[in-house]
Image (cartoon, rainbow, N blue to C red):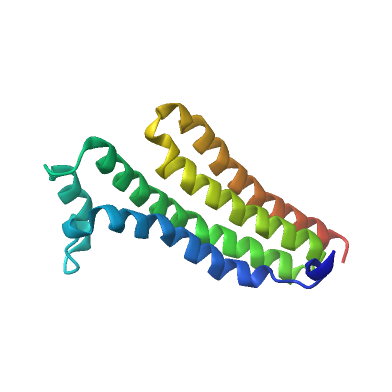
Length: 151
């Protein structure tokens, strides 16, 4: 399978970290003038109070901020799963595929949540995408646990 037989899962953790910042950068591209670097926690309330932003833009900024927070919340769980598959010597092809699937789930999650969810009907797809990412992490742990049983 080409380069898949060489384990590159550790490299996907920084990639996941970079991916989680994409919604934050998008948020700032829409509302940077409301960001006070000395007090960044006032950004979201300032966006909500802004009278020169339309509701759609405000909603996108807030969803981008939420997507960023969600990425932070799941990153440690993902990094632990990467460590688990490596400690247990899981087949590199399987570990690599699971890692890439997780990254793909985060990309899809961000797009659905931040952009497509202008239409609330996409909320279920967003949730399903989030659950798929968590399911991939569980699969990594289960794969590592299974490998531990056969050592």
